[in-house]
Length: 243
Ligand code: 6PG
Image (tube, rainbow, N blue to C red; front, side, top):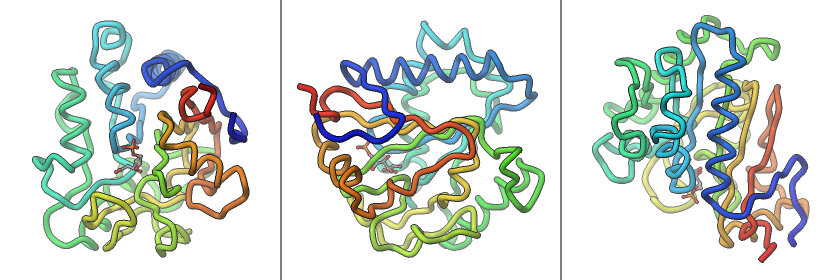
């Protein structure tokens, strides 16, 4: 077994990680008294199972879709119709889930990269209703993140300036540090930390190396994942090297 992050929970496989995350979202919604519930989605391949599960028969009826608002922790700066787009991935995985018009807040990918980051920052500020984040009133009820094999999360890549951004909520990432090598738009660590709950979903043997490097003290971006609320790593046995 590799050395694990604090607050790690281990599950037999990727499907059980997805089920655990889905159950947490259902519980969060059941406990929430808020008119609107803000979820920040991660991209990549790991969360596809979760998103399909949420839209599936075991969970779709348990979620208050009319109160849920879905945001993105990052996206690739490609059209939403592009296979590499996280909006494309989420829309595909959610299928015909009853998401009301205007409740899926994709990061714009027309115009310039900087304009897209600025526009998404405006979207978040308008939803939040203030220009600065109050730790007592998190922007998101739940943030989902993944872990890249190079130790990145969202589109916060090793050695790139976005990792150190502490003021802006959303920044442009002209050069991705891992495939797909397209420009990105990403939320920053302060914005991602503005969460009641933050779950990092990590599955597969390919993530043992970054997990080990992080546990060994290497200053990789994912070490800086934090939350003003709770932070939990949901790992499968393959990622935790438990055979
Ligand atoms: C993205 C994601 C990214 C992802 C990790 C893990 O846009 O690619 O936001 O941060 O979570 O790269 O990706 P996998 O789940 O595909 O391993």
